Amino acid sequence: MKNIFQYSFLAILYVFTPSTMFAQDSTSTINVYLDCRRACNESYVRDEIRFVNYVRNQEDADVHLLITTQRTGSGGEEYTLQFIGGNLFSEVNKTLTYFAAESNTEDEERDGLNRYIKRGLFPYISDLPIVERLIINYEEGDASQTDSNVDKWDYWVFDISADTELEGEESEKEFSLRGRISAERITPEWKFEFDVNQYFERQTFKDDDGTKTFERESRGAEALLVKSLGEHWAAGISGEASHSTRNNYSLLLEASPAVEYSIFPYREFSEREITFRYRITGGYYNYNETTIYGKESERLMQQQLSTKIEFTQPWGEFETNINASAYLHDFKKNRLSTWTRLNFRIYRGFSVYVFGRYSWINNQLSIPAGGITEEEQLLNLREQFTSYSYDIRFGLEFSFGSIYNNVVNPRM
Image 1 (cartoon, rainbow, N blue to C red):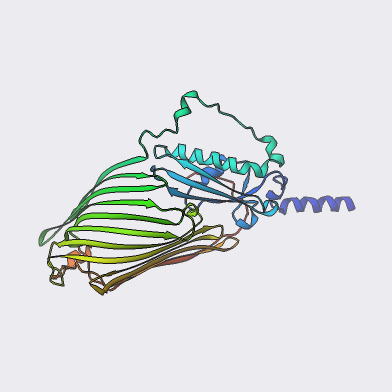
Image 2 (spheres, rainbow, N blue to C red):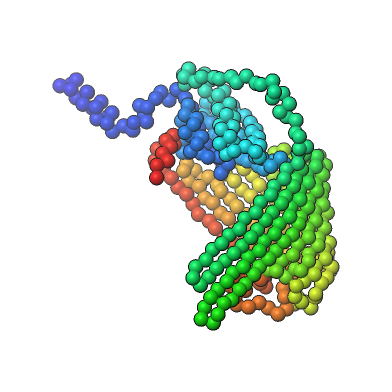
């Protein structure tokens, strides 16, 4: 009877114990917390790299893999992979950088990222039983690839895009057309960007009183030249020429020299960034309609001070921007804008996010004196007078259950 009782107890224990406890020896591989921050396809990573366990919470991980991305000067993407050890690997941290060229397809880019993820994970599993089931392949290089690092374009990248949209129903039709041409050359010492854009939109409405047509158009060109002055300083100049029916500019011409200081070295931008920028702008403004200040055209000078603070850490992300500007002829004509974004992991499976934007506006010098019609206001065809604007979003996320996150099921 004693043996029967023991066997029955073991059978019940087996039935009601989570199956993951019997899935494998806990030392056979490592637990990884994949933290992409929108920089990768998490389902693809989990489906292709199966020699580790993926967990849903950072506290259960042997390795916290934090991946961030930044646009490169050549038009591609630079991925920063931070492998942060936990538990037995608390002193084992490393960082890898993966560059994906602009010409790469999405499949080539994600495969390249997975290769770097495997490379970074290998030291953590090299002494565990799972390593016996891995196969290491070596691809011998082709002699023709010896000159692959030679840049025939000398860091120049060009983009041309155009699109049109047609939308309608019985009483309403809308047509829009936009185009853009850009060129840039970015090296560690210099940064040059040039952009030309055009936008046109026509909206047509039919009712018992007839047909009404509204149009909005803008076009412009912008240029930026920046010189690196070391790990903490940069200086540059930008210029803009534009036309906008919404903002009441027949012609806008601006030139803006600027200087920037970074508290942390620029190379640490993927983890932390605090910068201060001062800019002074001289401009000529010719208006489509006489403004509320009785101006048909004028020359103005304004100054601008802005700061950017951004941290990307295992606990989450924080970013805030503050921008203050004022016209030199009248400091009461000013604007102060700020926005903040916070995604903070409080504890296992529990995180909060907050986004807020607010602007104090006292510098709308181009508002037309004649005002705007009700239709222009509803369709946002003309800039409207306001002393402030804001946008606030916040929420929380809480999840619980199995610590594992290995399974990928794309059905439906």
